[in-house]
Image 1 (tube, protein in one colour):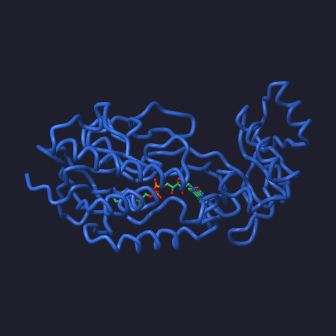
Image 2 (tube, rainbow, N blue to C red):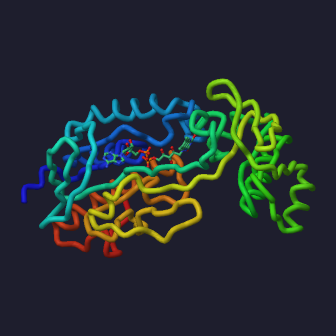
Image 3 (cartoon, helix red, strand yellow):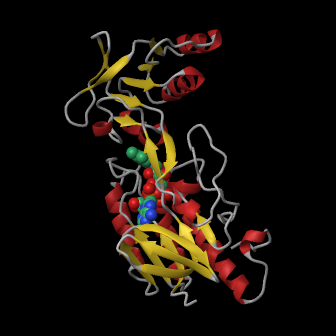
Length: 318
Ligand SMILES: Cc1cc2nc3c(=O)[nH]c(=O)nc-3n(C[C@H](O)[C@H](O)[C@H](O)COP(=O)(O)OP(=O)(O)OC[C@H]3O[C@@H](n4cnc5c(N)ncnc54)[C@H](O)[C@@H]3O)c2cc1C
């Protein structure tokens, strides 16, 4: 089989571009195929990424793509990988435009779909005045009137966490709170207000938030809302290529299972970034993509010289 590419990277977000940089610097023939839908596109800036703190996501990805132009073995292509299979010494991938590409190794850097609660007004404020991660967006809304939409012990913990960013925090339980007595005491001690009224929607101009509206017709002033999310694979591509899913977690529902070297259960198939992460962030995606790429190069070298492949446990460190 003619393996046109040493590696195809599926996805051109933080993980995929970071991997492509390391692969390009290692002179690997690398194709990055990207559908262009990075998960943080709606955010005004990337919070907490050293060297790029607060930078608009689009500018960050454009800078990453620009850096890759210096490496002649790397090609960036807009498109979508729909499926594929392991064949002989590599993988055949089927693209949405009808073409096929063949590679010795594949890195899945496809990100995840973030599912937020179905509540009128969230979608248009997502990543702006409605957010899921206080470490990403808490600084931008510090000292404002904040609310947490969640239930049970997790809601209590998220509300207590948000107190680092504001003295004015309300926990909205969207129905009876059903809290343990200790948790109710913790909220009182931290001066977190509790509002159990069923939530009907959000009000405010454009992507701004001014108030949370309740089913009883009342409102509570609020300028930013922390909501729970679950993360889901964007397609069945990983499964089609033979990768197993990790055990479901409360937030990350169906991550691809990888070992510490980002190798999936299918030899030659690696996964990095949100798609295989338990702590999703841009910094973690950059780090994962970088390490996965180094492991892919090691794996290639090991195969070429009859050494133990990366996925079988004794691949060397960088
Ligand atoms: C609203 C929001 C705001 C956030 N803000 C922050 C923040 O401020 N700071 C922070 O650290 N983290 C933030 N995060 C988390 C962060 O964005 C992610 O952890 C990070 O983007 C993951 O990078 P990734 O490369 O794994 O995936 P992504 O950035 O999602 O990139 C994956 C890429 O793969 C493409 N793709 C998927 N499937 C295919 C396919 N089959 N074929 C071709 N291409 C495909 C997608 O279109 C996409 O372009 C935020 C997340 C959200 C949802």
